Length: 364
Ligand SMILES: [Ca+2]
Ligand SMILES: [Ca+2]
Ligand SMILES: [Ca+2]
Ligand SMILES: [Ca+2]
Image 1 (spheres, rainbow, N blue to C red):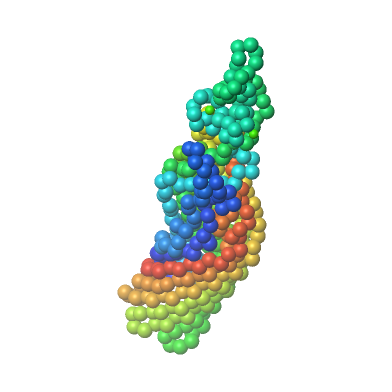
Image 2: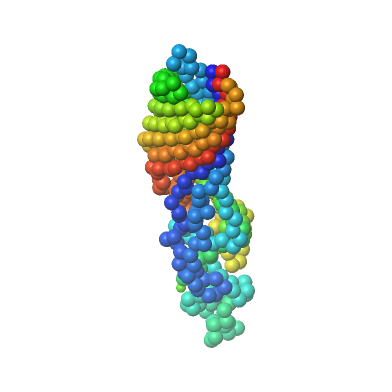
């Protein structure tokens, strides 16, 4: 019988950097009467390789050089970004950010193109002459209804006064394998194992923004990578005195059942008014996509064990993993108001996991 526990300080490689916002919608905005070129402020580079914690338990039984082993792994890795004053410019195919301007505060839409049609407020025909006609000059007060003048629209620039983004990876795994042990020398042996493995990694990218025209916007996109398949592996163990060395490799060929989900809301605090977008309304939405990808995985481990007696040892080691066919959430976000959406970007990526491990083992 054996039981071993390892604590992992692990990292996972993040997705390629993408802009938070739609690069194609950057451009000229008129802010307080001045037109200037505005770009998105932020990108996903806050997702880098950082260590977080995980736990792994393995146990099994070997008798007459054959047996079985089972293992569980679970861990999280979380990173975040907090930014005051973040411009996040979404694509806006329905012109929801467009609106009239009343910069001179006279209660009428300003006539930006100077054709005497005041946005949605009608036409200025001149100054009333008191006899039902009009004389010069134009007084800026509309005199009769007119078709709305879209030339007087401006695109309002969304700037969140507070913005937070979060990247979260949650890993859970289970493996069950049959085992054969071969003595290779007096103080070393080799074990061969084969069986099944399930590795479930949920990759989440979430952000929320408050303030500005899109005040109270929150979008959460997550991809569940459920990898199920067969696994083979081998472990070579050598002992000298109270020290033991394990060198181990596993190969896992899986189908990754990817399930991407997105939900959120945009501009939930929006109420119409002067100097604001004209057609914007609070919105909420959800989207989901499923797909499958072949996911090969390799795992390599080196552990040194210091035996304090016949049964118990302390473990110290390194574990690396390469996982193919992995799907990231962050590159999928389609920054489009009002209901966002997902592309299939970043759905067949290779990620690397690196972990330093320490723990203990019990053999009886
Ligand atoms: Ca006005
Ligand atoms: Ca006009
Ligand atoms: Ca007038
Ligand atoms: Ca016009």
